Length: 307
Image (cartoon, rainbow, N blue to C red; front, side):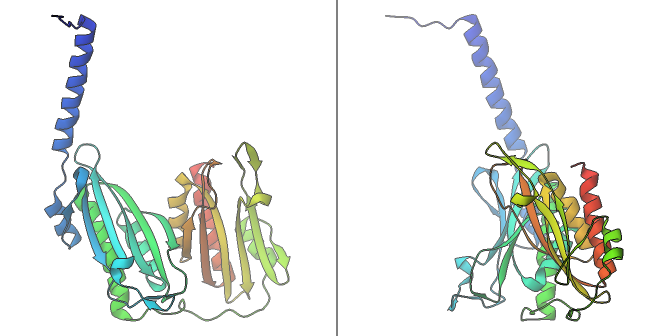
């Protein structure tokens, strides 16, 4: 019969590993989330999922949606949800996806920001959808009940929009800008960047630099923040694209919304870029000087991050 003996160092290593596993197990048990408390804070029933995750859902059955001519059942992709997982101590992390119609985006985004949540993406999932459907992804860290209250605020803001107008509206408030004359000199001064006149459209372009697959990238390859102004000085439209690193996203979003500029998309344009870049598309209407001032505030917020 053979006797197997562990060396002192092996036994010490085994004991340390056992202690670590025990410690992790105890920590995980102590960090378990309270589904009832989260559900009460969110105003909906919460369910316990695998891995200690707590999840809440809201099916968007309040508006009938057609995709490619077919009425889409809510269970086929019109569900809002938020999932919570424990992090350190008594804190948690939340991430989720919220179904929004075009006239709900501003209210939902503003509610998220006012309750300490982040907006991490805004995009579409369908083509030929009537009315158009978008998906706003949210995230955050902190006290799980506070996070759940934030999600509730986002969903309540959406419900308030639908209570005011049962059917999603087809346009932002305000008049429609018409082709006219824009004061290029004053707008350029307000933006702190030169403007180029392209057949009556005044356009600002600011380049960024990065790498992808070892090759240098710059403005000509699409790494730009740009804005185009049309209309006249009294009533103009401004659309454009903001390029940002990950840490710049939230400051830029907050600045644009504070200025009343609509965020219409937030996503990436490329993979494996160094640094990773994200792109925000925006739209605004109003006095040209006010639009330029609002955009300048976002450029300043981005600069404060240090990139």
